[in-house]
Amino acid sequence: MKLYTTIASIVVIIYASSVAAQEAAPLSAEAKARKAIDDARIFEQQARTLTLFDRQGKRLNPVGTRGLFANPTFSRDGTKIAYAKRNLEKENADLWIIDVATAREVQITSGKTREQVSQAVLSPERSQVVYLAVRDGKIGVYRHAANGEGGEELLFESPGIAFPADWSSDGRTIALGQSDLSGSVVSSLQRDGSGQWKPTEVFRSPKQIQPERLSPDGRLLAYVSNESGKNEVYVRPFAAGTAGGGPWQVSEQGAIGVTWWS
Image (cartoon, rainbow, N blue to C red; front, side, top):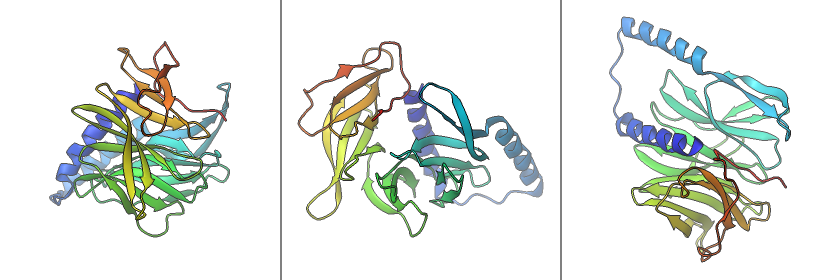
């Protein structure tokens, strides 16, 4: 299930980040040879090709070359895909963006050994991308130019898990999911009067919540929750102070993800 896979992946990220700042001991020639063999086997077993399907589920065409991909996300117009790509040699994951029409890939981040990137979303006009990353043992939401130029900017540093789920079509709001031992919180991340990005709580739950996509007009949020005892899709208003304005259950057969069709 996507919900639990995401949480488990982030747990691994947190664990890995606790040792990321420690310089790895040099490997012997024999150890390097064993690692190269292990890496080749992992790649052969786990590498995949990004493949497009239409709304009827018909397979269209692959995009780009094989790789160790995670969390692929379309831009709103469907022309670009952002995803995390694992680097077995560095034992990390960096953010990449691929153009669907040309298959041209752009590497966005270059993290240190064992640093991780996940859960990326592109801005409506595709000029920027925000993403969850572990940097120097800390979890944060970062922004970077989608052409790969320049450096990354920290938007929000969280004491627990925090990840961007979607970027509203007007460019003003990022749907943010947060979770800790007390449960889950969905927030609206917007700029305040000083231009800083600040989260405002929309609703919280003691259950697990995976925010997915905002409606095209930004008024509603679709998300996955296990509050019924299994993962289901729900929809509710997305604005501070609307905690009592929903939710409406959409599915009854279990779910792993959701998107809107405009």
